[in-house]
Length: 365
Image 1 (cartoon, rainbow, N blue to C red):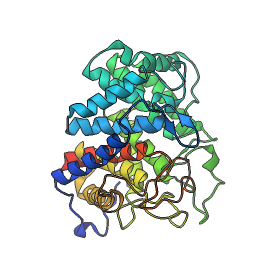
Image 2: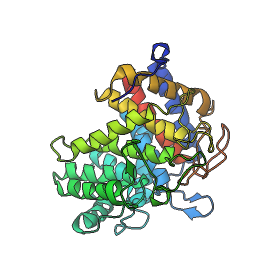
Image 3: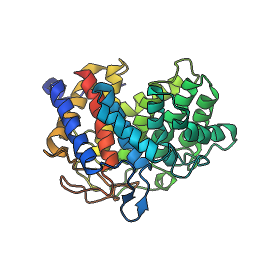
Image 4: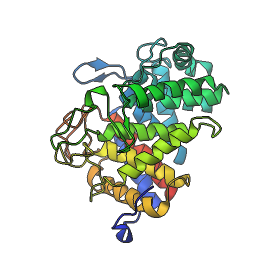
């Protein structure tokens, strides 16, 4: 059950819809101007193709922006991305890697707009091979849930085939109940360990369990994007819903006074400070729940407003650059330092998270 904050009576208000949309447009325009070629490879410590998970998360956000602010330039940009990669996955259609399958979420969005078979040929082949196999332990890190669950559920809906739903649950159940010994979800705390490396006896410097903000944000997003389309008749729908509500109840108690969440959810002294990606993903999850009538607006609206206003005030620069974004990794110490002006190794996924949040905040107003 969600707790009522002591500061609820002094709750902030959401900004006007126009201000939210202007913020999303500004952040997105900064990125599109910087990356006019959607097929250009990404060079950090090495060169990577631009259909990797980081860019795929950006396109999730872009398609969410397009859903509230339909613009031809958005869909053209997404189509360019798919076409320049020949609608392929980084490691080809035989991959079982959830990171490589994340691009399929946008491929499916674009297929829904124009059912050209090549748009989902490779992603369907990849997922079909997993459905047909007995292997169930692929998702051994929680980020994988966000990268792949929405693909499984949307293929199941598209083809009216519950085999996709069953396989998705098998993979999810392994992560939740078995990975790392007894699973990565600690229902008592309502949070997930990122992978087996962080299951106790691993502890943070203050002696608490290590619950990484963005990792838990990926799970919230996975559950939102799954529940959005999964038929309520599915035998595991209520379990996903319960896990989502349990996480929200835990997270609402961990929000900072400035609206953000720390990178280490139970140890604010371990690389403490503002962080945009986890905050944006939690905002996305809370706002979606309020919009669907699943979470109580009276309790959650102040949480959402504080988070969204915090990101607009502290993260979004006047030119559209997003600050306080932790770079890639899997725990609080990775991708540091995180500051208002520090540039992460990849700029794309942070923007994707911000646009996902903004799309649901916009619908609330």
